[in-house]
Length: 304
Image (spheres, rainbow, N blue to C red):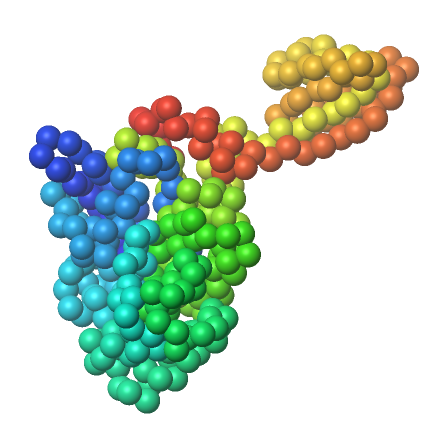
């Protein structure tokens, strides 16, 4: 069941169109990735969902409400890419302040804040925020997005500029939130992180969604899986005779056959044996999300 629905969302700034005709839905408990190069329209899209930017056209419904409505804000947690904090406050005071803005009872707020900071492994939570490292500040910002116990979380580049250890911790924490039933819209430049935790992905370029779906669906539509068969003789004619494509690479005394159909692996093996040759290696090559993105980024009209 969809908890977030977007239809023909569009945003113009003067004569410039930042987002054009975005349509997608997100199910409850899903991690939905939004990826694309700088200027693709990712952040503008997320800000429209959070009610921070008013769309020029189209609609969005988040947890049954229009973005910007007070009832929706209580069910939403938003983590922007740049998240200025009140640096004269301690982490605990800062989070208690925001809990009060959401009318969270004091005892509930204290328990919720302590639990979030414990799970984020934030030490020195009574230190002034201005004296914290960038990674510690990011953890405080994440805890702020959770202080109202939202149903939907929007994370825009949650691990931007952080060291690998802190980055991995935040990615794992995001997965834990999903496992608990939170719905998460997740934007990141690091496509490996998106690939590792997202259930479905929308790829944006020039303000448009140019591909969307599960990683498997996007792979099937834009590249798919390849099978590499290494042998001591060239058996590509057997595949060509069957009317299917094969790419051949000679590497020393070995021949590498790249085919798209699993049945062709057996065809090559039989042809190699018939020629008194030998198959020395068989590998399955699955394109990463980054490989797919680089392939389709120049084709904005293509959409799955």
